[in-house]
Image 1 (cartoon, rainbow, N blue to C red):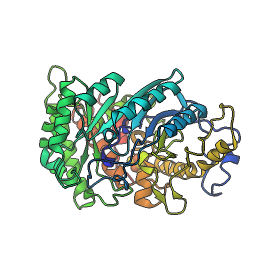
Image 2 (image 1 turned 90 degrees about the horizontal axis):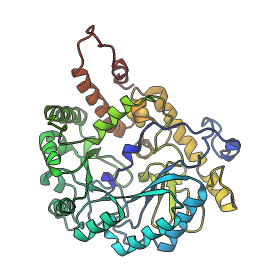
Image 3 (image 1 turned 45 degrees about the vertical axis):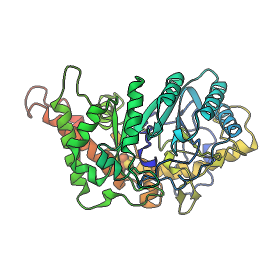
Image 4 (image 1 turned 60 degrees about the vertical axis):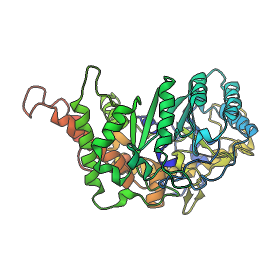
Length: 450
Ligand code: SF4
């Protein structure tokens, strides 16, 4: 499931830079002296996404998956989940709204009665905040009973599909090697029959890049409210990508150009049949009055995403980071919630020794991540769209978190921004015509990356 599970990507919006807290310097004392300023303090209510792993197990064995333990059938114990939710409430991190993504492994591989008990625990700890559950599923097990469950709990569903059967089945296979497309499409049919909205996330592998029309037609007919395209990334247990091949960047540019042509060619009475997450994200960034003013994104700022594994290990930042290894710092694990605690934000009372230990765990990591974000801001023409990228890609590609550009950001961010801005440019009046200087900001942002 790993490569296709990125419901948090749309959350990479501009975010307010947290204010430094008194005492932050002392908390970050373990960081190297030349690593830059200490990280900003955790902010009350900053948590946007709680990523919970009910089990690492996945019923599929996709060849681009980054999860090393997807054959492990262990399940999060409900008393541990109870403790995790109590810690989230006590930490002061959660605000008035919280999204919970059941992730990392196939969520429907865990029985519904486990979720009934789990959702009851979530409701018990909600404390008046609005909680939205999300499942990103390969849809192989989705049937009428799962659809009834989704409807009963208002679960937002994302389906992982790579397009037409030949593209999908080349990588997304059962453990016995059979392709999973037919089974996934039965799941999609169940969702449609139940009248449930769903979005789709596709992984772009090298072979998909030459089939833009087939991919477009497949998703335009699917009935999803939106499709997102994740480039196949080298990450964690998947250290090499089919996109490492020569000529990939040019092929990816052609793919996006063709997709945008197709989108533009079928406005229809209510717009194109297809909504594409990446295109909408670029347009939303351009329309945002705070364009270019963000200090980071949900994957690199502290406390925006909290990832908790089935055994209680936890970390902030990109979900793919949890359990990955840093050459010097070791496993990306900030603590264990089966025995330990989450850090308390400054405003939260009742800080214990365990919470204090958790407080001291994250600043050295954050300081290294912040150094990478500063490099991005100083050097990258795409900063305003991306806000510093994903620490998981930086660690995999550079073996460090204080890096800037990665191949993943080049392919997954910069190429898309270029293609959308080029398409917008094509709709502008020629230079010198009335109103021709209006979108100058967009053109400036499209300058080549250093
Ligand atoms: S270098 Fe890459 S990760 Fe950094 S801001 Fe630019 S596009 Fe994003």
